[in-house]
Length: 413
Image (cartoon, rainbow, N blue to C red; front, side):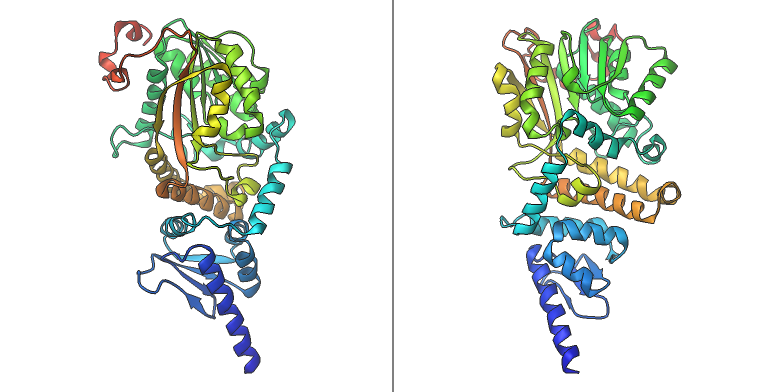
């Protein structure tokens, strides 16, 4: 009896320590068949049930890494809505400045082992993007756009919002028929194809994901578009002169230690007279990406602050013309992805296994929570060289109806 009481006291102490470590969120945390802790005043939004004491100790020592691993293996369960639970935890946890030493050590180790050298980048990208186009086709939009959509109205469909995102990017860069554009990190090719088809530009698009490049080339062939060249190569091998440089969703995979390399690539691509756009997941203050996400989902990823991103533009006197934060749009995008993923979970389990389903569910829900609570941002930065002549006088060109675009752009339709 006394031993059982001591065991229960230790378990309660561990639960309280874990609850305090994540900021005391509006959730209940419980050991299955044992004690539980929760908010004293606010009503809990969900309940986290930890299956056994060993899992409780693992999570208490390192919540950032061990929680994701325990959830993926089924050692913890969520009673209620997973996204609501993560929203509450993120809101509470990231209001605290203090981080334990173990997560910092794990973060440093991942940074060392997941570097973005040419060889490392290819391995990191292969880990995430070359796991089968059929998997992504289950829950992305029909154009396979795997970056933040742009919702002109909150009720827009995902398909509508992804097309609107591509137009939003093209309008910001003010593409003109006949111009030469380079895209670094082109995904499955939708933006490059859209630019060539709708704006009459010539595009060279680079990517090191083999499966994505093969699919993009197939789409270009199917559409009979000869104004796009898809190149399976690292952005650092990019050569030639272009009117504009565009990167949507690649900067997160570059690694801050390689920003000077990217800076040189941009300058030799557009010189002093060109322009460009960087679309990337970022932070308000420097902080590494969640260790579990880097270990299992996105190896080598780092979301920079705006100040850190300026290390790319400042060396060549590239001027910032426009900065927009689409955080709420990415939250909405992720809600769509998560809903579609849940609707396809049986097919995903058949392709992989139940652990994979739980892992990706947590990744998508956790990402949505990060954008809901503002621990992640989505920046679009438009820049231009000191001799660039294509400078807009106002932002009117961003919002004019497509049917009212100037004739010089309509000619490309």
